[in-house]
Image 1 (spheres, helix red, strand yellow):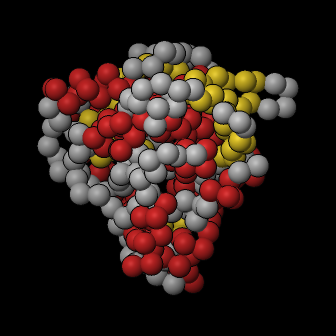
Image 2 (cartoon, rainbow, N blue to C red; image 1 turned 135 degrees about the vertical axis):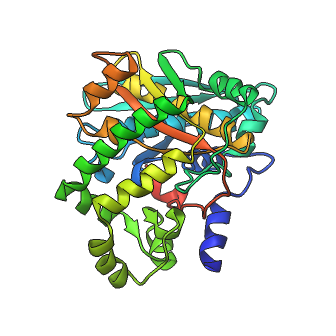
Length: 335
């Protein structure tokens, strides 16, 4: 783990005093993303960076319409914007859609620095997939989280009452059960698990077992045990425990369905996640109700948004951090 921790810390080094475009790309790649697939590419210009989807890193079983990819790109774009703002290079974001390509163009300018607190949170933010302390989050912190999530074209629904959280949990259990009964989903998830530090460092991606509180094992042993202990019943018990230890849930929903709306959701979620990090509040995805297409309309109806698509389900609360996840070298994501 010492070599793993050194590698993870190097990826999360602070921005230099005069960062270049590659430094901004490194901070962009610290964004959350499904299965830690890192489905992004970056194209550098003189004073601009294009962020493009990398469809070679798709997860078709869990994300058949590439929804998660574009949410991820929105998260990366917001990280880049915040890092640029904090460095006196304020950024402007535009989504460009052509016949064969949807990309995010981030143009850099010059102005006094801002967003420093959120920028400092970028290397510390993580999706903390563990039990939380079960305590409520105070009203002042909730106000700051709501303010951070405010983004044009995005609705963020905060749920903190226990009966509503129990109702969300029922949808999570239904969704997880459906996914666990899908052999393609299980195979895909297994392919992205890195069972030991050496494997995680070598690939620079995927879900390192210890980041979820599981023991590190030789790859062959991890694969063997995965098939025997990764069961629907065990996962449902884990998610029930984790949800009941959380202070609340926030559901993000775009006003328009499609890549541009999904990108806006990613931007909103990332600002929420960074503000939560500033406040010492952890978060983790609970996306089962929105990933199972047959369950999604009922979840939308329950939320009071019939006919619309909820895009993210995020639980939050306080707990100690877990090991940080890996990222690929910046050179590997430049085109």
